[in-house]
Image (cartoon, rainbow, N blue to C red; front, side):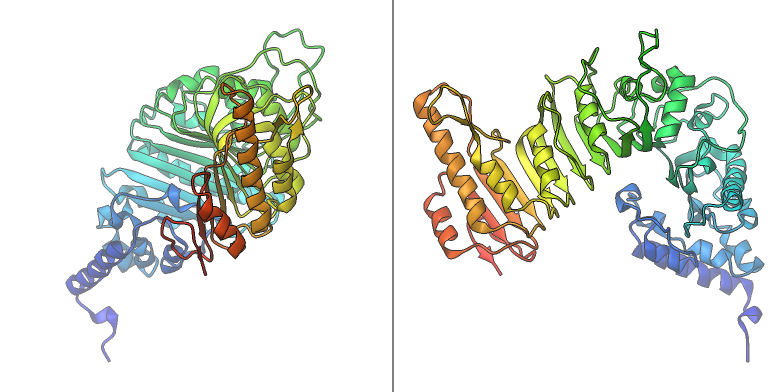
Length: 502
């Protein structure tokens, strides 16, 4: 029997290239879980958003070349001739990177994207921490001569001490004019980098950088030691900051500026960055209970979209207290957080759109809605959005001295979307619409110039949600001039009319 070893190299070259081209045509994102399996790699232990890896050309998505290069020396020699296959370079930090120490040479002069991840969350031992850090440092060493070609660098480490200091990439020595994305993230915060990466020259502009993700410890240390770093990212659109516990300002400090590692210092830093898309804050908290104190000054953020995930109650309230209250955010998104009732002196924050996702308790939903005023409320997969919340939104509080006049939480809301939420009932939701409409009508009759309660004029309920009763359907049909309703169950696409689709 003839084995593959007897096949002429020219034919083997052609077969492998044909398979590579075929795999390129089938993949449109990088990296997906399927790609890791195809490449003989384990997928990352933590979930990755595909939005980070959407690419303009399908061929950028395949990892077949990595599969071929792992078979044997001959196949590796063939694969490394495909320069376009090595525009994305992937390292699993569970494996020794040395066999691929020349991989960055294989792409020639083409722009490259680099991704390091750990497919298994290791035990938190000194040995495992040091091993991961050593491998990251090796790969960074291989990459240094090619940094001027980098379009994207992403490191998803298990331990934060494995991450190189971000200031390392801002060196004038590297001239990283093509870098558009830099992600330095870790699952477990175990201090600052244990390895002493050589300190380069002063920071230099990264004119193409539009996406930046850093741990809280990294951005706080960088901003404290090198305040001018914010000036080198003039095109930054998105900033993500993960995992940090802020300390309180020292009451005995004689400084006129915020102390190191305080929330005030953090906000003073991000207020200097001209973000054009969004600020994403994840797993941030305070090491103290936020007192009801006078804020010495407030800050204006350039971004109009703020995403808050897995944040503590004290952080949420203190964060908003430091922001200017005369601004209206475009979008505020709060998810995966348990929030306690707000302090009594809290000033509501305005946003065009408020989105709540995976808020599990009704008390958390009420707490958030009591501090935010929005014209559009979007609720996604929230068990906490139940009848008790809707009844609370319905009741309102009487205004002293004005008979029949009430104030309502979220009283400026005129657009309501409820997706993939099941813990409410159709009659209670209709009652909210009716009472808000009546209150608005009475307010206008009493004072035609009033700017009070606004009707909910558009409502959409879709996905895994309760059914719409016949009585409710009749009421919505007869009162279509008050509210437009789109009610779709189980993800069935509905026509833009009042209907309940099973």
